[in-house]
Image (cartoon, rainbow over all chains, first blue to last red):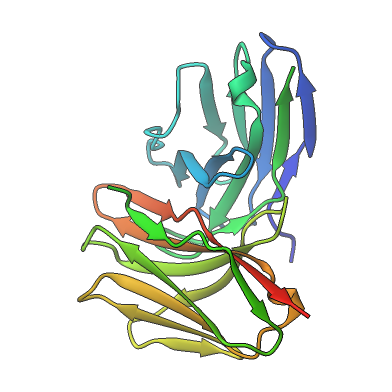
Length: 113
Length: 111
């Protein structure tokens, strides 16, 4: 079946602009996660959605970052007033439920110039 | 202290060799455990979940030691295609649902 998809695959933006990244999880997966991975580094948790519960935003690095999810489907991650340190690959993952394995999308490579 | 720690390597092994990676976790409340592989500039892909009794999938064997708080991955008969970074992942489910990723162990299988 279809896996997790993300768009765009690459995004180059100027410092100070806002960007919106999209994630389509696997159908039927109730949990959705966003991570950031800087070049040569590990995954950094950003935010987690589970069903209709309030999201866990504990990993968002600043108030410039926000995310929404519509029910148990699409999620968007928005970064306002982008900075050069925001340059990274943003990965989305979904899982059938809590505590079980996650499946990752191909990521969005964000470059802030 | 990091929730999950891995030896970053690199491990450089010849084809056909057996190689083992360990990963330690700090929180005894950890409940689910996984190994992922990540190829260069690609997303992590699930390799296997790790069960309490240990589990095997072909050339790959995973073990969990709750008493010592570590998990291991053994790769037998290494192939060139096994070259990747291997990520240890731990889940803690309590008031939230947290997944902690290790920074990965790099493996290169040499012809």
